Length: 157
Image (cartoon, one colour):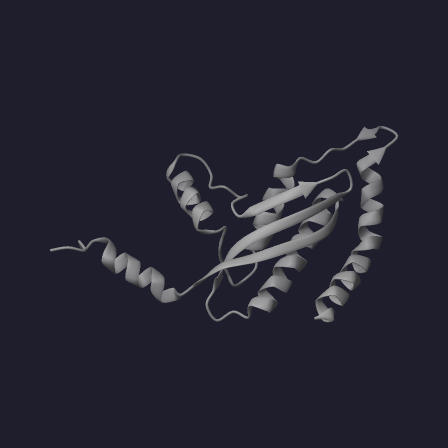
């Protein structure tokens, strides 16, 4: 059980050099740059969707709301399933996903963390202190086939 803690410490130290320089750019003699929570949420959401093995973001309720939102004109929500806390120099990110069946979940979580930390730190200059991932469900490819076949058929004859 100590391995994840050691990994987290190593990854934090690996990013310290990069983000230290970027953090200096957030507050300069010419002004302060403030990054809104929604910006970090969108970056994290996009970075998560880029990882192979992620079927969707959010728990059941978030996905239902997301489907309703998609039916309205405009773009789909890039922040679905993502919540963040952004400070002056650091950000903590919580992500909920639905994984594709057959993907090693621990590898998927590592890939998401790596991609999200890299994207957020490179684009914002904030240090990402943690990325917590919750796997809400596993998606089977057969689920799509069954639901589309049953969509046109009434359940009761």
